[in-house]
Image (cartoon, rainbow, N blue to C red):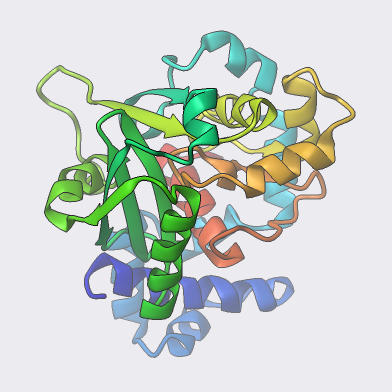
Amino acid sequence: MAGSAQTYHQIAQAIEYFTCFQSAQPSLSELAQHVGLSDYHFQRLFSEWVGVSPKKFLQYLTKEKAKQRLHTSTLLDTALDVGLSGAGRLHDLMLSCEGVTPGEYKNWGAGLKIYYGLHDSPFGGCLLAQTDRGVCKCAFYDNEPQAASLIQELYDEWPNAAIERADEKTAALRALVFPDRGQAHVSGEVPRLHLLLKGSKFQLKVWEALLSVPEGELVSYQQMAIGIGEANATRAVASAVARNSLGYLIPCHRVIRSSGEFNQYRWGALRKMAMIGWEASSRGLE
C-alpha cells in the first residue's frame, strides 16, 4: 500500500508514540525521529496529510481536550432534530440509509449482488462494498491477512448474496468517501450516498443516530443512550456501535468514553484517534 495509506502508517506511529508519552509532551524532533524522518520531512508529511502542524493535531487527542469537547459539543438530541439530511454530513455528502427487510435479513442476502474493492485511503487500506441499493460495508486493514479476513467477514455477513470483487466499480465510491483534502464540490450539486444497513431494530436506531453527530464533534456512549431515548441502555449502545460495519460513513469513531478515553475501536484505537484528529483539524476546532 503506497500513497496516502503509507502516510497513514507513519502518522499512526507518531500518534502511538505521542499517546504513550503524552504527559512528557514529545517534541517535533522526537516524533520525527520515532518515525525515521527528519524534522522537515515529518512536518511536511503531516501538513500534507491533515493540513495542520503535528503539535496542533495532537492537541485534539489529549483526554483533557476530548472531555472539553464532550461538554461543549452540540447535544445529540439537537443534532437529531436536524435530521439525516442536515448540516455536518461527511464531506458534504447527502447521506441516507435504509435497513434490509425482515425477509432479506432472514435470507442472508439471497438475490442481492454485492461488488467489493480494496483501496488506498487516508486511514490505511479500505474495503468498500456496495449493492444497487447502497453501500453495505466500509472497513479498514493494515496488511494482506487483515484484508483477507475482512473479505471473509463480508461473505459471512451476506452468505447467500452473489459477491464479486470489482475494484474498478468501487473506485468511484472511494473517490466520494475519501476525496482529496480540501476538495470542494464546485458543480453546485451535492453528491448523494445511500447506505444499506443490516441489523436489529435497536442497532439501526443507534446507527441512524450516529449519522446525526456532526463531523468534528464527540459524544459519549451515555449521551448516545440518552439521545435515542434509552438512558439505561449504555452497554447495548456500546455493543451496537461496535457492530457497525460501515466504518467512517456511520461515524462510530466519534463516540468515546465520558472520561475522555479513546477506547478500543473495531479497526484499531490508533485509527480511531487519527479519524478524530483529522476531523477536528479540518474544522479548526479550538
